[in-house]
Image 1: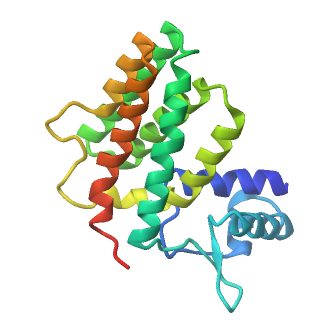
Image 2: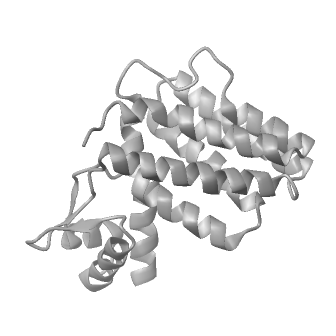
Length: 209
């Protein structure tokens, strides 16, 4: 039960279903998941220890609001780690794998163009995690998951203005796909790094210390 609760809350963090500043009440979460309160409390404490949640002086569990400096730190770590993942993925990706990434990106662009930004965020996450899985590096993948737990909630702010990442320009996902197809490790590393840099630029404008 504890693992089930942990996985559900972690997924909600990574997929931007939980928002910065949102309070998590163990009883309410337990009712939503259909389980008892104890495993939910254990999971909330575990996620707090992983810096995905915070607990205030009254014991209230809160989705943290990140400062600009913290956003930059996570962004830079993602560029390093996911860039390495993309580079390693070039050693293992098959044509079928690449075709799968193309399908994910197509769903991403379709949902974004239709204004279904919640689904677009999910497909964006699907793309990044699919690339990291192709790296066949379990330790690297766990690091990526931890960073997304911390960063996921603020991604919901990516579409709260008229600006769109890569609007009227070639999306970096396509450059990642091309690099994987040609097995160019450094091109894959650069493309993934640029995707994270450009995609996060609009977010940094919304946060300050």
